[in-house]
Image (cartoon, rainbow, N blue to C red):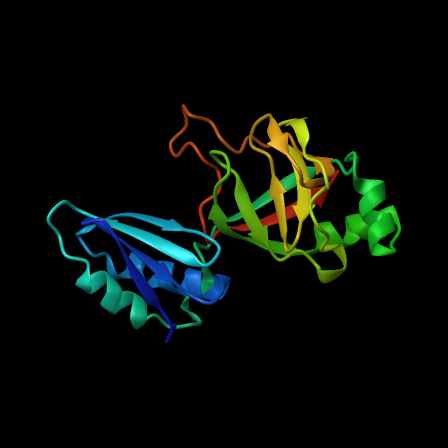
Length: 204
């Protein structure tokens, strides 16, 4: 079971606080699998899951399901795996290698050799926080953010990797780029990533 702390959010939602990303995945999996008719939306984050229910519906069953979640249930995720071709020529690639005490080739091998999980999405539409970054590559964000990061830029920060879905400001360390479209408002669904998906990066 997962330790869940409940915070009410108005009359139509509850914020479920857990201890880690694995707890988030387990709670999301449990609530999705329960297929409760009152649930309208699930919004996972780093350590929380916001659950919105229909107008007039109670949240008690949501809380019961969340508290009964199997701690290992979230490991299966959605079953969807995305493989993104990446050109490793990012502006911070040499900095990442120097900071890690590795060669550029070793950074590329480590980053592309891991499988990542979409823990949650945020910051911008289609922006996924991808856990699974190998420990030697875990580094802080840049001291000063860039005012514009090109769409498709692949970055790392802390324990996560990411791909910028569109041109935007950002402070992640950039190590490469992909042509894969992560967010298309005309597509169904518009975002490529869903929490629980897996992601692999393939050097090109």
